[in-house]
Image (cartoon, rainbow, N blue to C red):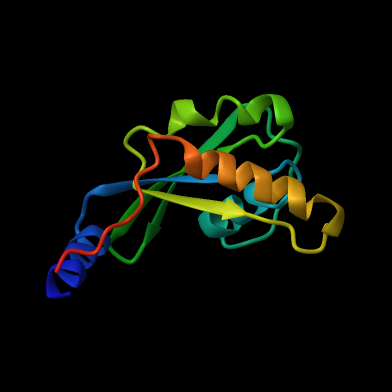
Length: 123
């Protein structure tokens, strides 16, 4: 278990840049979250066609956050962004009850991709 926390500490507190993908259905709030993290304020957004990428610094941690469009036709392109990604944030609009099942399906399709490596805990 100590090895796990050692790796986690190194991942979070080194000066290296960490690549994070932010995925989810269209209109789920990904871009709003991205710019809240970047600017510390809520800004007006338009639907993302393609992607937005921003550098965000939190304490000594540098993140490169990729906000990828969530429209149905763009979801088939998500796998092109998985390589070299260290974390994925999957955003779900919990108020939009009509699309919860669609979000569930998109999440499971993403997790089924062979490029997504589940985290492991070494003893």
